Image (cartoon, rainbow, N blue to C red; front, side, top):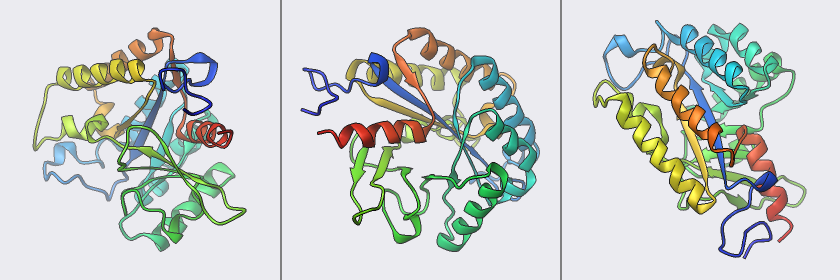
Length: 255
């Protein structure tokens, strides 16, 4: 049993919280497109408006999230990304499928925006893999074989990689894709039931949203209600991915 587990094997999160929650926003820039061809749901027309609305919501709720822009968003939405940093949100890398060279440029641009390099990646390149291209990363959100974070040791002197497990049903596009439309109530019910299960098992729930989808009028209220309920439970630790990964690494090292 881990030193930070209770006698039932459930993780005891900081301050005795029963569960942990992380909100990750993947921001797509003007040249990015969805897999669906419907331009009503493309990123370009609503990207800046959606990100601004999401930041307003997080400000109102006093929550910190992880914001992962793609290469196009870095240039198109730089002022909004500076606002993200100034508001205390973590800036991370949205993994590109052209891998190392594109990621390196993203890291450099984020350093210019935030004054420091990112330490995490939403890994859309090689799900779950710790490749040399990601040697700078302290954490990744990726496909995983477990519902709990995992720790991968590296060479001596290097920071161990924490993999936060991704779940396709905790991604807004799974429910809001115009190719497979679902009512917002279906998304809310699924995420609410998931949070109940996570609280019962001492788990981690990482929700991935796209501002050009989730922050639209009407849909935004679904996210607002879910976040209100999570906050209202009083027993969920809500933090950016970097904080959760750091806590997991430090406590795991005590075993």
